Length: 271
Image (cartoon, rainbow, N blue to C red; front, side, top):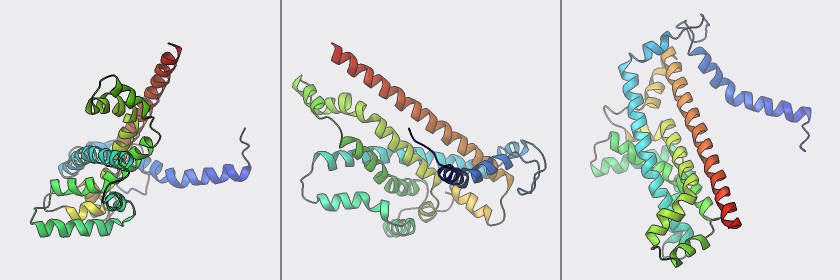
């Protein structure tokens, strides 16, 4: 049994307050009736009504969501394939270079990554916009997916795959019907992580975007220079709620899948 001392309780409380108190204040002041975000004028939902009539902010939010969904999906596919390559094929020419290129965005500053992608797009003559941001975010988030999936594959029991192939299943069918369902929680976790990173990115999107393609973080950053408006608090509160619900649903789904897997293993052992 863990015994909590007064110092540990105070330390944990201060740490959680430092992390979550600013978020709580943002949510509270999104319901402030005063236009001055630092002065409480009473409870009101008027800024949410104003938000849904702000076409500029809604367009930026919709663009950000589309970019995040598409880039996270592409990054999940590529990151999963990269993780399988690194775990299953330990010896091939160029493996060190390949792994270094996969993990480079993890340690490389966002400014350098964004500037490199900008030079690539300019040199290639590509018009910067929606698709360049998607490619930039895929480059950024693919490595995170690869790390998450690779950690699961390292503890994977390959005898299950061997048993499926001994029963006549070809490698491709074995992967989709045996391997993928088992590593699905890690794949989904990588997708959620990639989605969150794409929604939050500002630096790389600034380099990769062009005229007419402004994501929500870019719009908020440009408006914050002139002062925080209540509409910004409102849309940030909505994003916090969406992300929180997504994380809770993912946790519940992962827990249920793990419980079902344990039941199936117990049933198989009993049989």
